[in-house]
Image (cartoon, rainbow, N blue to C red):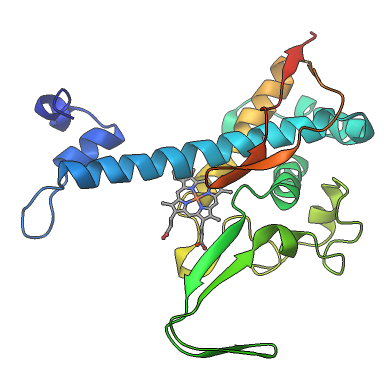
Length: 227
Ligand code: HEM
């Protein structure tokens, strides 16, 4: 921060914008607040998207999903190379959505009740903390038949509503970066698959474990370029 501060007004990166920002009363953000905001962006913004990207690559390269990869590659081959055009491809979007359904990186979205609330047979008093387990919502066979199967087509056949598909949480605190990360993921996946032919280095799926606050592949997803 000390290094950037003298040049902040000439730069347009996030750190410089925060250093230059002023509250209504003219005061600056404290260094501590800036540090916290940057840490949120790094953890909320980077790790989540990178983990989803790794899971998408793993699903697409499993032998049982070869037909999904072939269909995606056909769609990519027929598309214009401009990133903003790639981001609109329907099957590519469905592949990302289906990855987020099967591998939500955030396990639980938490809320504290401001008023008493009835949930099924439970009378919950104000102040109770409740959590919505995102993987359980996404594994409901009544919403997603054969729920463990990676099947992007299902996301095109029936668009799930905002309480059925919740990788970004929901309501007023829904993820601020949802649109950005979907855009990034589509473009990054499209460009990588158009440029390189990859293969998984381990034949078996990598176990998904909790890594601090996110869920993700225990050892990362190791791949090699074969063409
Ligand atoms: C695949 C990528 C991502 C996933 C799965 C994800 C998931 C989530 C989830 C589940 C929440 C909690 C929402 C709730 O309580 O209802 C959240 C909150 C948040 N996310 Fe993301 N996120 C992703 C990418 C990003 C990116 C790229 C950014 C920023 C550049 C970001 C910034 C935030 C912030 C600031 C919050 C807190 C919002 C609030 O409390 O008002 N996220 N995210």
